[in-house]
Each structure stands twice: as structure tokens, then as C-alpha cells.
Amino acid sequence: MEAYILNWLNLLVRWFHLITGIAWIGASFYFVWLDNHLLAPKDKSAADKGVSGELWAVHGGGFYNGQKYRVAPATLPEPLHWFKWEAYTTFISGFFLLCLMYYVSAEVYLIDRNVADIGKAAAIAIGIGTLVGGWIVYDLLCKSPLGKNDKALGGVLFVLTVAAAWGLCQVFSGRGAYIHFGGMLGTIMVANVYFVIIPGQKELVRAKVEGREPDPIHGVRGKQRSVHNTYFTLPVLFTMISSHYAMTYGNAHNWLVLAGIAFAGAAIRVYFVARHKGRASPLPAIAGVAALAVVAFAIAPASRSTVTSTATPAEEFAHVSTIVQARCAVCHAPSPTQPGFAAAPKGVMLDTPDRIAAQATQINQQVSSRVMPLANLTGMTDAERETITQWFAHGALTK
Image (tube, rainbow, N blue to C red; front, side, top):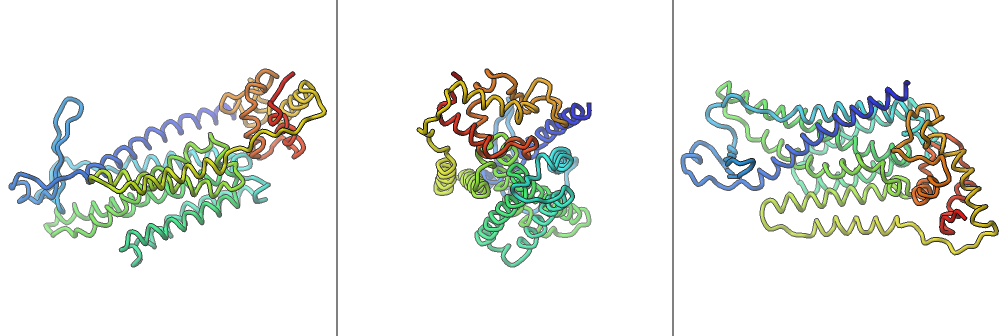
């Protein structure tokens, strides 16, 4: 019953996290697009009121006229809408989900004894330290003289994120490393909103209420952090779905795979942001697509072996079936016997010969990359992994 309740909690929190994340990212993408499509107002009275740019759009059967002020309007309107709870609820639900899956079951999803033999408390401390430390280092860099040079700052941040990807992959399981990399970037994004963007907006409002001239520096800082957030978005989204693709996090050089895909996502987003302003150099997009192509080529599985076996296909399959039944079917069955599992993960069941044969490609990929069994809970040996790999290399024959 405990595993069943945890599954429901996981489902509901994940669903809520997805909903709030869509709301936050959607609003973020829209305002970046809006900011880059503003044109100088044609109406002189609008310019005299302090409007620096405007945009006309049609959507949902109506016309909209969006305007942006250079600093603030002469009189604050009511009501004034704020965009912050989307970010906060995304972070809160994401952190709760991280705790629910990766910290409560750290020995299954976060710790890999083949990578680093660390305890549960140490793993959790490193995970939380990564989230907090990532923000502190990033924020200090943005506030330093380096923060005045966007290109130089971007270069340093890229080097540091690659270093973070490497470090996490030396400590955690592939899945755990990837989700903490995304969690670190996601924490930076929401901290930008909480500590920089919203306080700056509040100061602009406070200045107007008190009759002071608002300081435009708050808008400048807020925009810099907003642009960083939009570049981080695609790498974060990749890490959120990465657990479905063992070919990435299970690779021997998983940190390079993570760095390559994160670079691709950021580069492609750079292109689209620039494209909003009109004609843009295609080089960032080309670099992003090239990075994806390089990663895909580098982690492609080797060709099937031509080595022959002395065992008949039926004998080989019988051996493989015995291994899968003992090491995999304890979780991947209609009624798992492994503690902590109320249902077969991802609905994959390997409790019959037909089901094993149907999942041959996935079994080989998961076993050869060593991501399954999870944390090697069932103690699959290297010899057993080799037997499965050879069976697949011989064509995954059953008779």
C-alpha cells in the first residue's frame, strides 16, 4: 500500500509540476517574443506618455495592443498584474518531486555504487548543495564586473555548467546527475525571479507610489536575468524527460552527452530569440543541430556482432529468460515482488518469454548501459549482462 500511495503522490505532483511549468515557460517565452517585436509607437501621444514600444496582435477572435513604457507610466494603473506564482509553484512542486523520488528512494534512483560509494545522507546533502551552490556562484558572477559583458559572462557560465555536469556524473547515477543538473538550472531560474526580477519590479512600483523617479537599472537587471532564464529553459526541459532515454544518461561519457545536448538547446534558443528581432544569423541554430548530430553519432550502438555461439538459439534464449526472470521480472511484472514497486515501471513487463522477446532492444540497451536493474538491486553480474548482450548481437533469436 505504501508503494501505491507513493505512486499516486508521484503522479499528482508530476502532473501539477507539468501544468505550472507550462504556465511559467509559456509566459516567459511570450514576453521574450513580445519584447523583441515591439516597434516605436506611431501615435505621438503614446510616445509623449513614455511608451517606448508597442505591438498589435490578433488572437482568439480579438485584437490586442500591447505597450511597453521606457520606465513606468505617469500614473500606476489598477489592477496591475504580476507574473511570479507560475515560477514559484513550478519550483515548489519540482523540489517536492525531487524529494519524493530521488531523496526518499535515493538508494534506488540517486546512488549508484559503481559510480561512487556514498551514503544516503551524503547524496542528499550533495544534491541540495548543488542547487544552492549553483545559484550562489551564478548570482555572484552576474553581480561582478563580468556581468557587464554578456558574451564573456555566457562563456564562463558555459564552462561552469560543463564542469557541473562532469562533477555530478562522478557522484550520482546517470539519472540522478541529469535531474540535478536540470534542478540547478531551474533553481537559478526561479531565484532570478524571486531575488532579482520581482524585487526590481516592486522597487519601480514603490518609486511611483512615493513620487520618486524610478531607477531604470532595475529593468536592465531584470531583463538580463530573464534572457538567461529563456536560454536555460530548453536544457532544463531535456533533463526533465531524460529518464526515458537510457542511451543518454547511461552512456560511459554521460557528462559529455549532457553538456552537448544542453549546449544544443541553449544555442537553438539563442537563434530563436534573435530571430524574433528580424533577420538573424543561423550560426547558433546550425551549431545546436550540429551538436545534436555529433552526440547522436557518438553514442550510436555498435553493429551487431558476427561472433557465433556454440549454444542453439533456443538454448541461448532459455538462458537469457532465466536471467531476466531472476533480475528484471521482480519489478517488471503485473505484480512486482520487489519492495517499493506497486506496478511495473513504465508498464514494461518481462514475466513471459514472449514479452522478453518483444522487448529485446530495450533490454539490451538498459542492461548494456548498466542503468538496469536500478541500482543493481537484484545483483545482475557482468557475465549475465554479457550473455544478454551476446544474445541480442546474435539477432535476439528465440528458436
